[in-house]
Image (tube, rainbow, N blue to C red; front, top):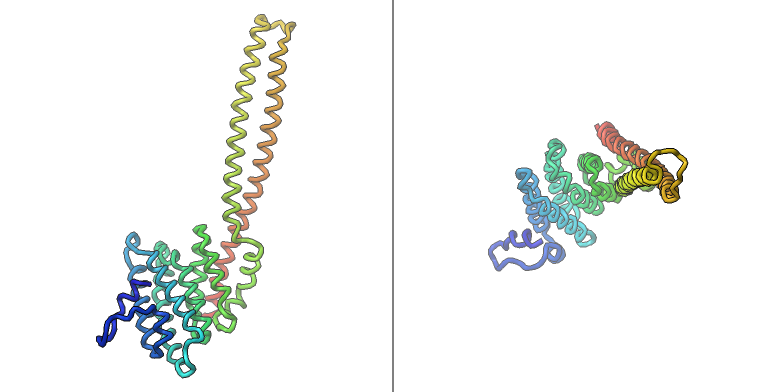
Length: 304
């Protein structure tokens, strides 16, 4: 939080206050104090996310949003009753500006910086909604649905964090009520069933299928070697190929070759079984991906 604290100077009456932003909020009742802090956070986030794609400092933007979420949580219970309206207006201004920043991310599908910070953005929305549920979060929740769908489509597991923050937003928030009516139950059902584990399951299965395929190829090479060995043994034992001379060693080697063929069949059967399971998992992933896209459309259709 140092880069924010150091940039906020005193009004000229003394040295820079070394207190943390949370301590300042607790000790100073004037709503302009958090307003200045929040405006500084907005400047950092907007500057980083509007930078050229390769130069955007995603981590700094993410950390700054994390600081805002912390400030909002620290606000809970600190404000006096007479300050609630003023403080709510401060966060309303901040929320409106932040939503406008992320609106650019919804328009710029190739700018991954917005999606990469979506989990931190969701944490901010959740934290503020818990203190000021009367504010308008309609557009913010729609944006989070958009980024959650993008992250899932990109196989980025941070989509889970976005969802968990969405799920934690109080039901007293009007936009959350809309979300609950149109799609929340379906997404929750999938999440509770373990959809968040599908990517790791897919990766594990893919690795196992490759391992079995490699094993089957090794067995096949050994079979070919054994078959060649049997042929050489038979040729040495019966160069005229009369069929009247039997090589015990060749017969034993042939039996081992038969055992290898059975082992190869077993490995291929196991590989096929896991391949079938992988197809089911990929089908589930596609189905949930479509559900997220439909959820976003249904949500915006309802609010429009």
